[in-house]
Structures are given as C-alpha cells and as structure tokens.
Length: 298
Image 1 (cartoon, rainbow, N blue to C red):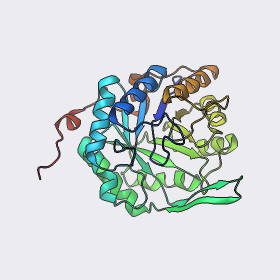
Image 2 (image 1 turned 45 degrees about the vertical axis):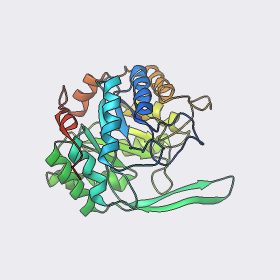
Image 3 (image 1 turned 30 degrees about the horizontal axis):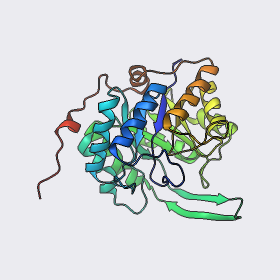
Image 4 (image 1 turned 90 degrees about the vertical axis):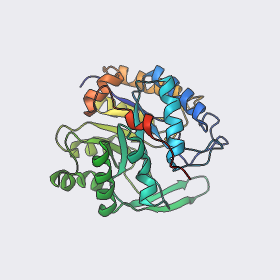
C-alpha cells in the first residue's frame, strides 16, 4: 500500500520529565499528546500506562482513564496497549487487554538480553534479561484471540521473526500478521538500515511491518522503512530528539518529522481508516468493552 501507517509510542515507562519535559503523566497529558500526534499524521497510539505522578502502572484503571481521555480528543485513533514488562506477572501484563479490548496488543516474540551501553562512562548502564518463552507467548496469544484483539508482534532480532512461522502453523496467528521490527536495543538487532532490509525479507507472506528504532539513529531507519514499503513508529518512548538534534517539545514534533520523511520517500501518510485496512482491523472499531468496564466492587 502506498500510504504509510505512522504509530506514536506516546510515553513508555522508563523515562521521566527530568530527561524529557514533554513525557505525559496524567490522562489529560496523554490526551493532549495524542491529539498533537494525530494532527501531525499518526494513526496509532501505543500506550504504556502511568499513575498521575509518572510512575508506571499496570492497572486497568489507568489504562481506561488514559484511553478515555485520548479518544475524547482524537476519536479515530487506533489504540495499541503494551504487554511488555519485567518483574510483573503474566496476568498483570494482559488483563488490561482482556478487560478493555483495544484494537492492537503488543506481543514480544522472544527472550533476550536487554541492556544499554554508555560510551561516555564505558560501562553497561543497565543489564536485564527480558524473558518471553514460547509458553508465555502462547498464553498471551490465546488471551488476545479470545478477546478479539490483534497481536502486534514485536521482533528484536532474526530469531524472533522466525518464531512467527510455528505460531501461524498452529493457528494462533492469522495472516496478515502485524509485525514490528525493533532495532537499536543492546542484545537485539543493531540500528542499521542494512539490518532492517534483511529483517524485512524474513517477514512471512505479505504481512505488514513497521520499524521501531531506538535512539537518535531512528531517523535513518524511518527513511529506510518508508523507502522499503514498511510502516514507521516514532515517539517519546523510543527517542526524544528531532533529526536536527533538538529535543522534541511534544510527540507531535516527532510525528511531523516522520511524516516529512514518508512524503520525501514518495509515499503518503495513512489515515486511521487506511491504517485499519492495511493492518486488517474492523472499521469502525468496537469500543463497547471500554465503555462498559467498571472496577469490581470492594
């Protein structure tokens, strides 16, 4: 498809306002950022929830409050919830998807070292193992399928892309599969256009894919993905900086820069309706679960 789907990764959970003042904390902050992103060309928002003081939250209550606020300002956006977490139970990683049924649910496709290296300090500044064995992946897929939520399969390396095939064969993933190729995390595929081009050749069938590039190398990968026919994700979860090196004042600044790169590649920016068609989502979406959910009585 000529039109390129742009996703906004609106906040993440690791960074705070000391690092980037634009990171949203409250539902109202999320709504303002989502509106700016939508106006700049985003069709999808990827959400990690936070408490209003900025701490990460895995509770359904925060996901609902944030989503309600976003849709009040930008009702056509495609909603994508994260399930990525370390040190959190599988139930807590998936319960917001079961309860609120967003259109997309992020699904990490394999285990890996997950680290960051500081050249200035000459040391690994954090060092984690992100465990996602097949048993957990299958558990999340079964929950998403039962909830009518399309998985967004996040692949950090070639082995993660290869892991799609048995899950398709088992009937747990239904083509076209929504695939994210993530580059730039130490322990996974490096942020290099040649690596992206190779990963894109491994995508099964005609499934749509997007690039998620971590760090300031994001802009090289955005340009490469647009030229290769892929979709793109940018946002304050992945990178704070614009192509000229200035810190973004909002997610909208990052989306605007991505839209320019897409258009310079000769493609157009997808509307939410075009994005739903490309990804294989119902249009209009069913938001009934979001409207009917209420916290259990004490």
